[in-house]
Amino acid sequence: MNFSTSATDGFIDLRSDTVTRPTPAMRAAMAEAVVGDDQNGEDPTVNELERRSAELMGKDAAVFMPSGIMGNLSSMLAHCGRGDEIIVGDQSHIVWYEASGAAAVGGITPRTVPTSSDGTLPLDLVEAMINPRFPGSSATAAIAIENTHNRCGGTVLSLDYLAELKAVANNHGLPVHMDGARIFNAAAYLGVPASAIAAHATSVQFCFSKGLAAPVGSMVVGDAAFIESVRYQRKLLGGAMRQSGVLAAPALVGLNEMVDRLPEDHIRARVIAETIAEYPAYTINLDTVQTNLVIFKTIRNQEEVIAALKERNVLASNMGSRGIRMVTHYEITDMHIEQVVSALKDIAHA
Ligand SMILES: Cc1ncc(COP(=O)(O)O)c(C=O)c1O
Figure 1 (cartoon, rainbow, N blue to C red):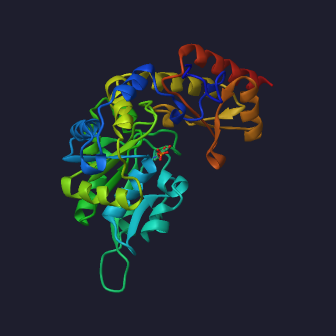
Figure 2 (figure 1 turned 120 degrees about the horizontal axis):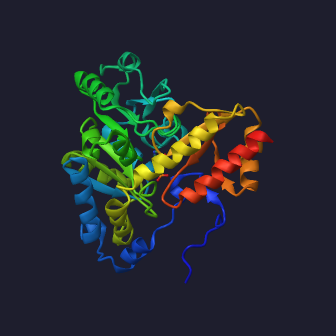
């Protein structure tokens, strides 16, 4: 059986790192996974993945999620009650791409703070947005941040910034939730273990299905009582699974085999970005190209440029007012990058 075909075979698919398909080692691990009923806590592969994840992030406990969005939503539901507020960046994935789950499902009001181009939320604005709990008022129950930041082009929050944000949150007794879908990319950029980043957040959601190339799944980590609550919210949302060891097994392969290779993706993204920067047909802020995402604008119609790239076998995604996005991942080789570079040059000259 040929496992490698997909609707986009033959293309250099830079739309997202979510397009990666499980490696042969992942498929073998899925076939061989020892499984049990996870809702009874009896799936040894899920248990092992949760244990490893908590350990890697330096937290007490972890719970395996079917998706990053469910991880973020379950975490927000665990941090906030109905009628509470969450402070979140106006460019965050939570605000743009998560079907307004916090509001729609949890009755939680997102109080948005303008996201700076580096993905940070200005601390004075965060502090000014905090609504204390008193009768007749809704109250801030959590602060959410994103690291790396998708709509900012994969930017990484510095440890200093995270420490300052944590201090603001602590002063007001608030938890910090980190949407760390790509936290291992952030760790690779900073040259620190992921736990050094996670130390500044109360809870972290991270994905196996992006740079780690596993087919499905995310993890939420935090202290034991919080994770119990997140486990309950996962059940409420219909995300509690059964023999999910078949999904945890490739995620474990991702942790073992994909984390250390992420800097390769960053180097390749940088090559694309530097090519883009050479041509007046495009604009890019090279400072934001820190990890595996490249977002740029064009003086031409964005759709036309995406179509022109596709004619040259390169798939990119349209991020609307943010620009065109290209994402490198383990299926993208140096040879592909050469083709992407020549497609970009060709279009710039057209
Ligand atoms: C920053 C960020 N957070 C959360 C998610 C959600 O992950 P999923 O698509 O697995 O639900 C994504 C997905 O692209 C993301 O980029």
